[in-house]
Amino acid sequence: MRFAFRVKIVFCVIGLLLCASGQAQLPVEVSNAWARATVPAQTVGGVYLEIRSPIPAKLVRAASPVAGRTELHKMSMENGVMKMSPVDAIDLPAGQSVKLAPGGLHVMLLDLKRPLKAGESVPLALTVERADKSQSTIEIKAQVRDISGAPPASEMHKGH
Image 1 (cartoon, rainbow, N blue to C red):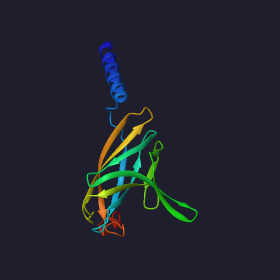
Image 2: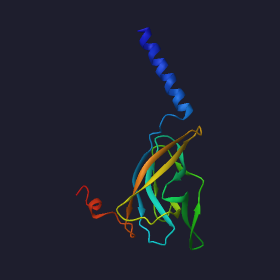
Image 3: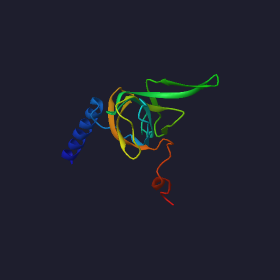
């Protein structure tokens, strides 16, 4: 019985050390990731998604090999004019889904290296920071939709 108790303590200590060092992965859920197709001369694009963290955290960075730069952005109305600006981070309240969508928070792809074509997917690395400043990176793929941003017909009929 003493041996089993000591083993449990050792595993708890190892778990705490991994969390403290930032090596443990934060179980953040990302769903419905998509990007709008671009036209040949277009040098910017956007990625939209839903993200949920079980603990308070922040989305602090995004990166993609299809863009020269990637920024977190927000759109807002100011004096009747839609404005877009970068943000340092996007808060992820514990247990709540945060939606990054057209006209609001989103990931901005700047200096696109090539046009985004409907049907392909865009790799994206999202960096999430916990309250203790430790970080985890989540690798996802965002489906590229046509210019209208509408999901493919196959997705629209799921569950019917």
